[in-house]
Amino acid sequence: MHRLAKLDLAYVWHPFTQMRDWLQREPIVITSGRGARLRDVHGREYLDANASIWTNLHGHRHPNINAAIRRQLGSLAHSSALGFANEPASLLAEQLVRVANPRRAAPRSAAAPAVAQTVLRNPRLPKVFFSDDGSTALEVAIKQAYEFARRTGHSRRPRFLSLAGAYHGDTVGAVSVGHIDLFHKTYGSLLFKSDAVMAPFCYRCPFNRARPERADAREYRRCHWECVAKVEQRFDAQRRRDNPYAAMIVEPRMQGSAGMVPQPDGWLRQVAAIVRGHGAQLIADEVMTGLGRTNDPASGLLFACHHEGVQPDFLALAKGLTGGYLPMAATLTTQAVFDAFLGDYAEFKTFFHGHSFTGNQLGAAAALANLELLRGATSVKTRRRLAAALRASLASLWDLPNVGDIRQVGLVVGVELVRDWRTRAPFDLRDRVGIRVCEAMARRGVLTRPIGNVIVLMPPYCTTPAQAEQIVAVLRAGIVETLGGAG
Ligand SMILES: Cc1ncc(COP(=O)(O)O)c(C=O)c1O
Image (cartoon, rainbow, N blue to C red; front, side):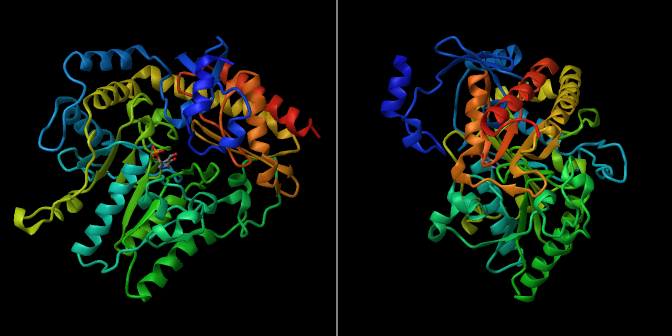
């Protein structure tokens, strides 16, 4: 066993990992990477099919991001945002406000109406609060929304609504608005109370009267938008209790850790109208969906909510913000929220929250380089090409009887494995089907991580069509090895 693997087994406790299983075998120790590839200590190469847990956008060791970090290192790695401003953080905040308030939005269509024209002198999300990761980006949004609801008199005991199956991070506030029992139940007594409402999960929706087909369930669903009615009912019920919801938190277009659960077009728009109608705030968790992951590259949009013409009151970003290089997050919000924290010093209306590395220069420099790449013609072309290549290759999986649903939104894919596609009967989690398929894929040179029985594909944008084909072929081989062949 490699020396570094031994050290890992001796000392490191890995996240979301049953360490007893981990300790049974030599771990893959990653030493380097380039583009979509990673290399381990034995010189084996892998395709990074989940972009290093959904963070990497343009590939590893991208020359522009490397250069930006090196340049910044030449002047300073870090100074505190408590009491001081700095150059890259100021520039980044300006750029984030620019991309979060697009002047021109998606081409107008029934499914994706244009975002209201927004002039940059009067953007709807003009303020940026920096933090460190997805959880803290959500923590900031939750705390600001909480206090905003109290200070404006909207709610005395602010309460939050989020989607069934939601995951918004692992800090206590973010866990409080999460609804994955496996992760969250243990900490129940530590958490503040929040409510869950039905998620629009067409494949497993009790209101979808369609029988399973060999297509994405959103395409053949037969329903009456009962999931939207449930949101309305929740808001109405909470208002009758004389304590309207302060905010609703959603991952627009696709819930990630819930199992790559995509929303049918139109869901977000209808839900946003309900939230607004009840005077609540809309918190968009775009930690996974944002920065070009889920948008049509030709639209020029970078955030999932804009695809539906929805502008939230809070936009939480992390993961890909630095291109997947450094931990940095941002929570964008409105002037109204910002103003609710203004006052004479002695009123103590300050937002008493912050982290040592808030606005870190290296992270901000990487993020600026990332945004520049995202706006470039090359990125638009490669994202478009990759989405098409994935779509074409994935179609080949429908002949496998254990493939129940293939869910793709832009460059995010979830392939749900089931006992039999005709019944949608799920595998017991204890069978570790997703884990076993991913282990079989790793042996064939493709790295990803499952969510239960859902295999996630979320490659870096620089992944070539040939590499995308290889990823899907390896997924197929992994499924066949684990569960048997085509039916
Ligand atoms: C949608 C979403 N929100 C928040 C988080 C938490 O981000 P982090 O792991 O950076 O704290 C994640 C992480 O997977 C996520 O997918």
